[in-house]
Image 1: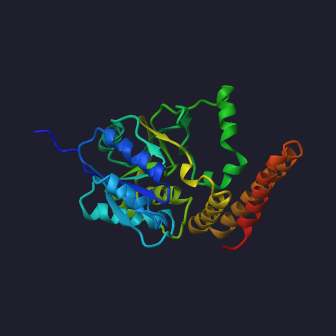
Image 2: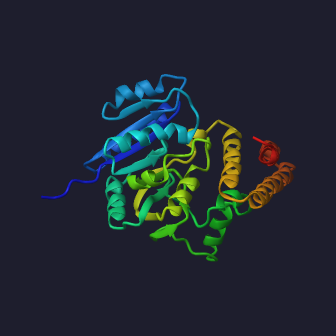
Image 3: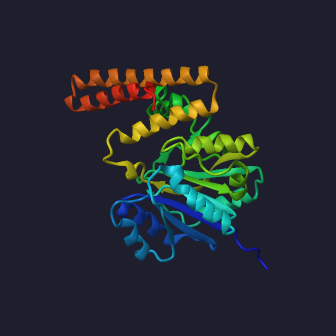
Length: 308
């Protein structure tokens, strides 16, 4: 007799965006996996979107959070539920993800089952037009220093052949963006739940770092693929998402690094945003509609060095 597939709880955080979450949930009806439960966690939406979705997708379990205290606080009730109800794997997923490869979860689980040391794994992410969307990071401080090496520079270097893309290779990483992350239950048993001090932005790095400290590895597995519509959930929020990101980044630095290192990186990042603001100010001399972008970068550079 064939062994039953490991039980997977798929956790999707919802806030306000009915169409975004609806498209995600509808795509899961094509999933080819025999033992899973989707949990939609409504993060205190102020409209009726979650209740509409609950009626439309009766196969999903809905948890209604009383307050919106951020990503980690929103996901933790689902993690607790999965652990209490026999979940062998817990899959944290953005609501702007679409299933286009029905077997992706089976492939991802099979990879983790055959690699006992792997505690966290993520699939290959694609934009809606099929282009590769980079999600792997080679060092934990990439979050703080990304302003000095934006992703467009990596794409230019790859197009010119200066560096080689590893998008189709399976390899160990330091951390993966928290768009789609599959965890073995033992990871959460070892490290505890998500740090609720982080409102939005560093949860993925914090989880991988804490898991590594307990001996677990994080891997990128491109044979499993998902489409990520990329920041659909944050559209029309202006600079708000970047402010959350900046605050969370500073919190992460001071949680995991000694104060001199954390302070130096905090100032370096603020300087990076300031320089980016100068660059956009120059561009705005020709393209006046870019002046807001420049102002946003200047505001972020100030925000990063202010106490939160």
